[in-house]
Length: 204
Image 1 (cartoon, one colour):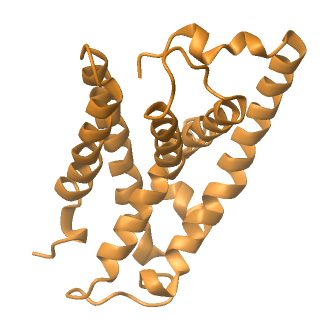
Image 2: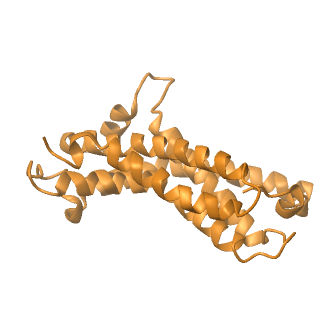
Image 3: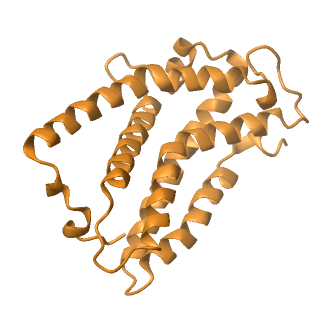
């Protein structure tokens, strides 16, 4: 949480290395935004164990909508979940004043770029006026799965906002900052999924 500049130690990378990292981050962002996310959406739409919404309509009283909604929600947060988990697993074992290991720093940075691309994909394309629904249609997501994936992806945004609030609150604690954040992360992740699910978890 409240890590000092010395612990992050960005200066460990020289000017040339930082330029390379910025360039690679831009390339990674575009690849995830234009290739990975559309492919992930198509997979969610067609995966048999998620209901295969691309080929069949899940029964109204069946679990298909809930599985697809949950998978879309978790997928929208996947890079952030891995990054936070990796950081917390290091933080609980670190020595006071210990520096974030370089592989972990690079991995967390790459995952943060991926999460930003996931969020950018959810905004659609402002230049063309396309919202997420149009982006899903263009990616090849069928009509039955489109609304479910869209709901799960947007609810992921709410969870990210809840994570930020949890991080801000944890940073105000004098001790056990990471413990506070880890504990708050559970409701910050579960409650948006549950409360904002609409009809996709509990059919009226």
